[in-house]
Image (tube, rainbow over all chains, first blue to last red; front, top):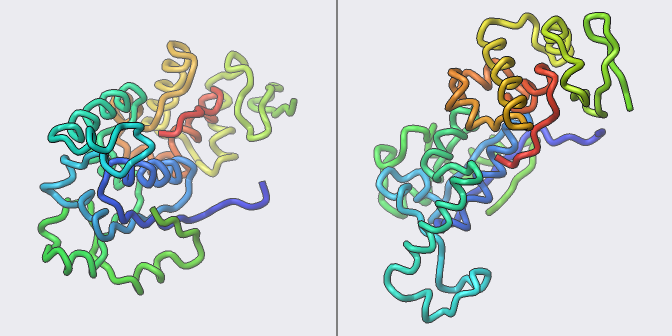
Length: 155
Length: 105
């Protein structure tokens, strides 16, 4: 293997379950291969590092054709929760942790966890609203400095 | 199939250096494999993980994920990454003489 990736910077911009898991799996997988990883949570992705929201991230049951569920059904109250619960059970069987535990685990692997300053300002949050694993609230410029020399993945 | 010599014994490994036949592994080989991975000197926690890997493999036929290691080996995930910087599940599997785990988590 001549070409090996040494570093990845992963941007998480979505706040839905299906928008978040792929990024977390990529990040954890990178660390498992000895690849340096930094995660940058922006816009609705910020929910993943938001103390009171991280445990309530749901799968999108409307506007999600991959779910093969009629849009009208997906919009009924509770459907999103039921689908999320169903997926959570399936994932636990595959040893995929719940999002909150997953973020803590990824932080423990030595990956950097950062929140986007513009988004924190937009949602009128402070660092106190964020889980303790967040190392810093950083600007786009600081993100690019950190990402230099590695691959950038946007999700 | 490539071979390697650890502790003076010829063993079968794959292209990445993982043991093909876990029964060929002995404890005496571990320090040498570790050194080749950049780990000089196996400490007590290293051994705790290596023995856990062997036991899990013997029982389940595959090495444990990092999550399982963190929950049941008695060594935290933070410490696991300090002990095996190139990735605990993979690196410890190599040193423990078991095949590379293929999970995504």
